[in-house]
Length: 214
Image 1 (cartoon, rainbow, N blue to C red):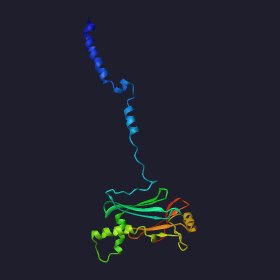
Image 2: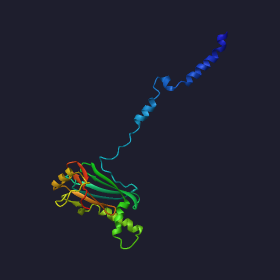
Image 3: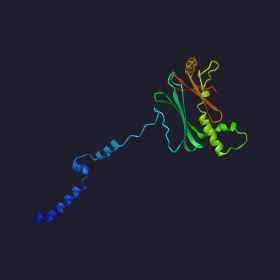
Image 4: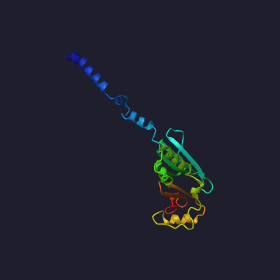
């Protein structure tokens, strides 16, 4: 009969159709189930570190670490001042300056290049040119002296300091001037850029004292 003659061909077509059907359709599961599981199981990228102190360890790129504790954002609990130099060499590296409050919150962070630390060496040179060893020694000395006690001043704004437009706002300036216990910190960037910062109780953040200590 005609039906018996085409039965094997029909069976072959049915087998091919079954093999070409997606596994998700055969099982009844959605086609994106595997992808969804992969995305949800993958760890989320870590956020930028803005609330905890950077931890300096014995990594190969950490060249030098300088730390000091000093009263700054609190009248009773000293903050941690830290300068970490990382890079391939002392003369081609980056120094991260951070201030961390007693509760572990990083309240200030600034990146300085090794050139920023080396630039003022020109004022101490007695003859032109300096060896690589002398330059590296100078950068290391700058770091050792970065948090010297003389760099901290109380009050942050003295009675003879005058407000200069272009710096912080006048309201913050006047508030700091009335607070005799506020501590400022001064540091040098490059050859002549002397910066002074203080914690503003009014703004709850570190502010730069423009026009002071230059």
